[in-house]
Length: 87
Image (tube, rainbow, N blue to C red; front, side):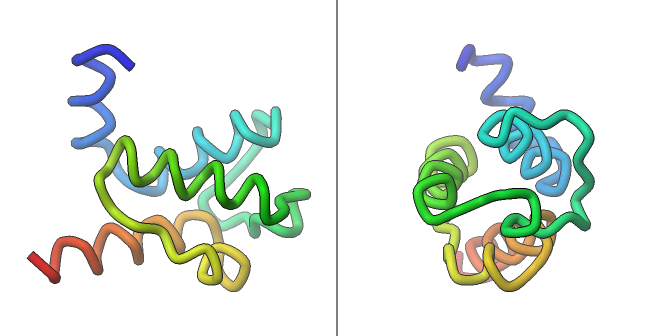
């Protein structure tokens, strides 16, 4: 990522980032923040890749279990919210 992309990632809405990242992982372009990761064909290896991406780009830990239980947007938003309230 370039410096500009990192800045954009830090200020972008987590739902939009989540959809973009999951879309890249699943090679799918027609996604919504309300979509379920498992229903889209996500699995544990892809969840780990997504978790690593969230950590790298947003600096927060993503609980992979939440990714399997909630929508993509909710899972990422939850991780960001927990990280912000912990500081």
